[in-house]
Length: 215
Image (cartoon, rainbow, N blue to C red; front, side, top):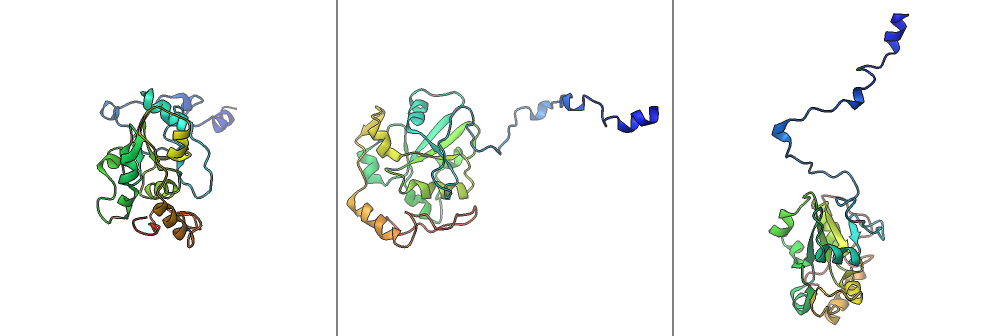
């Protein structure tokens, strides 16, 4: 009967899900600021698999970074942050890298540079942090993620691997860490599972220790 047909008829019609949402000219240029996916790059860049469960960021291969720096992709802009101290940075670095020493995060004010703020969670922009061998970058990337920077990535293998692969966009020479820095890392590791990383997984909003100041 007609009553039974109406009872089982879909609410809103059969094609309700195919109905286009009307657009409003006032908001046509407004884009989302939250990326619910695992990576803001999705298609343009394939991120490497995380090496440990303590990493809350994504990794980028050296070959991928080199391609994006030397052959720019209109859909992706890379902001490369060299987080080493001034002396090794001045001896040699990737030409496109901006200097952002990791000691900035130990300061109570102005710990995030204007460059980081300007590119924080911007669509199509990714921040890539690099050091010599990941010994510091893992901790710094976790801290930046905890500070709300979701588009932070790390150069997988560090500058050591980048130099071994022989890319030409390097100014000067890429020196390994000084013996002083290495010994400082060893002393710090006596109380932590790895350089600057706590045994328990950090959560956003917490501020893990930076280890020995000036290391």
